[in-house]
Length: 317
Image (tube, rainbow, N blue to C red):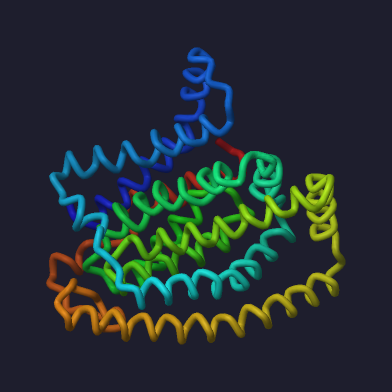
């Protein structure tokens, strides 16, 4: 089985599990009297993402270290990755704004609802858990199937999958963009820890802001609902003005992100020269043989994943 086909098939299976499994898991949790939403969230991530990854690696007899890119990062790399994590957030906000014009921000409401829990527990559920489970799935298993592909193509496809994985129309745009950037950083550093750090910081920032809002502002849920209604029903000129303002800020940070990324590439090249690990720094171009060329991206699992996502978002299935 070719690498890309295998990666796409794995994602399709995870997507189907993510849609179907909660129905059966809900019944199981009920029988076991598991009603705490925090426990349910943890179990869902472990069952739907961690266990399948372990099963995949065992069945395919792959190397955990190579497949998941469990390679250490240098201090300079970590510093730039932290900086990059904050620099991408205005860009993320721009795409989130676009989504807010058309869809309800269900995740924002959920985070606000659980923001009253202890901060460290909130951080563990919102930032640590996804940074491990989702990264292992997308930047670990799936991205490993694209190791022979142009890094920008690999980043685009896995970014698309990352957007689909969230099964939320409001989140799709900004998570797809983040997924693209996460994959590029992993390919450049050859370490999944880079995207884990970014994922943790971005989600952790949201969790921290939600916690602070819960402490200093009363009735945050009502405020969020009012904001959602306001954004949805703004007239065209107001929407365009907001898009222009957020877009201008995002454009500035795109330039900043670009230069941080180039610096990260340079440092990673130095790491490569030191013999620490093999890193792809040829700007995405590789010499490939005929077998790799015939490993098409647009295969049946890929197409089925897109169709299923559209049907679920349209509430047809």
